[in-house]
Amino acid sequence: MTRYRFDQIAENSTAKKKPEDSDRERYVGLEHLDPGTLEVTRWGAEVTPKGDKLLMERGDVLFGRRRAYQKKVGIAPFDGIFSAHGMVLRPRTDVVDPDFFPFFISSDVFLDEAIRVSVGSLSPTANWKDLRVLEFSLPTLDKQRELAGILSEAEQLKGCYRGLLATCDDIVKSQFVEMFDKPGIPIKHLEDIADIQGGITKNKKREAMKLQLPYLRVANILPNELDLTEVKTIGLTEQEYEAVRLISGDLLIVEGNGSDTQIGRSAIWNGQIDPCVHQNHLIRVRLRDEALPLYVQTFLSSSEGRRQIMAKAVNTSGLHTLSTRKIRSIEIPVPPFSLQREFADFATSIDKSKFAVQKALDELNATTKKILNQELGLGNV
Image (tube, rainbow, N blue to C red; front, side):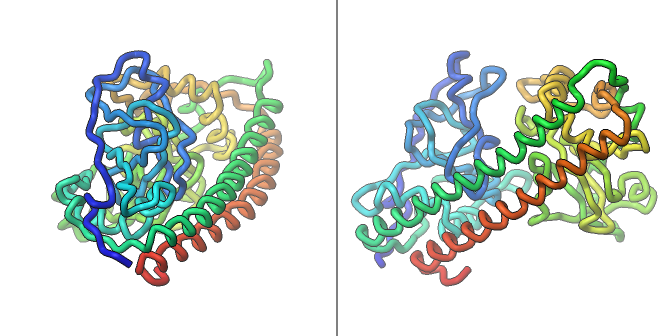
């Protein structure tokens, strides 16, 4: 293998424009990039994005340099604009094969180095001036082309698996509509069927507190599921713990993080870590006996639930936030508990199929990661 500086491998395109209303449908933000896949399946903004954005061309590699630890890399699906918190990268084809280039940028070899040189405490960011001087070893162009063929076929299979997962979700949503989108079901405010509580605020004083406990952040809440690969700790008093502790069955809702796709995102806590608390950007909904968490969560992700969430969100300088008070006022149909249980049983049966598909996807991800790491000199990491 031959060693190259990163600026010999990649070009950092910095061309920008101030978005116009017509750019909304062709905007890709960091929130649209999903870790573990190069495919970009979501894009667009409900309002015209603020500030200058990077120009991207179809096939460009999009790298989320802000919070690089999230490992977000994608391939631009069209000509458009990209978040200024990212990078638009293009291969220097004299040393790297264009088809292999996206896999190199998504590799642990590159991303681990990008994370290492990131600066800033709240939102660590990888800057070009630090990245450009990093050195990496690349196999020959012939070997890169061979690897690109293998990895591209695997990526297509991964897309099929993700499609099956999406189909499972669509089946659950269709069943929900069939069972509950009908007149005659009593409508109640969420606060009528649940206790709703904000979370703990992080500050410097908490670092010295004796009681340090795991706490969940916005980053831990994926659409309808939890990501517990990185759970941080926070200091708090015994009194605070009693107010914000989590118990199995709690529903956690993202109040907002500047992203329309994140606001209102929810997941059910099943006591995976005990004790555990939650931060102030997550709203805890603890349901009483009238409603099941899975039923309420499915409603919040339905078209009517999303409509209410976005209608109640406050837009401040282009950033949407959903307050605890607004969450309390969400109107939700509350059918008989027996029907909710019937729906929950159906959704749980679909989840078993999702689990099998997800397991196959995880195994394929592990295999391709191992191949790429070995070929780039990282061993069996």
